[in-house]
Image (cartoon, rainbow, N blue to C red; front, side):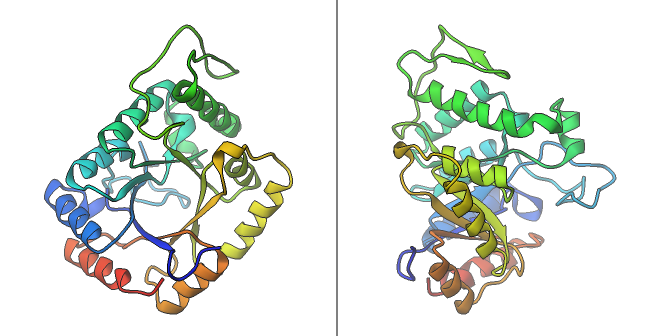
Length: 287
């Protein structure tokens, strides 16, 4: 279980809206590293429903950068902070192309990539990209297995329903032995099983009252699927989005619940100065 002395702090969302420009990114990334943030997370939406649907997190005209391109830029601006995708919508990606991109970013950043993935949930986005909603979970599992094979095997080969390859190889391999740390996002029973069986970490989001039931879901999943020894203990990463601001009591509660990394999200991302002040305030909270 995490303690108040070791719970790490991350920041998410700074690849969108008013803070996505090169000057703003350089300023905020440098400031986050100075303040002791340990991770910087970028989300993904390739396209958004237009007009906006109730389940869409953003307006279709809200700008958001590709997370791997954004994180490559942040990697060049920083030296220590880890670089996370929160999350890549995996079934929308070609797994071999993504494996190459992730390995490239991991090498160039000195092994700092945290590859967060999820199955996705926005039907208009997935349909536009040619991915059936019905099989997105199976694709996600298979793509993770295929990427791991490509990163780790001396003679990579994989045969599945959605991806198959043999007699090919891809170098450079990621800087971290075994590939980047895989972070599985989601709150469904399938996502919990995926995190236990394939993830180094689980990524959830919400408010302080939401986390306990998700931790129970992870405990149930641990009794249903095997966890490979190579993955080690499952790391718990929690992004607070409701309410946006944290106080010392909330950080203490998260630490007591066993959160390893607490990620803050400085919505509404309308003013770079407000975001910088948000980072300063939250970095000073006990954890």
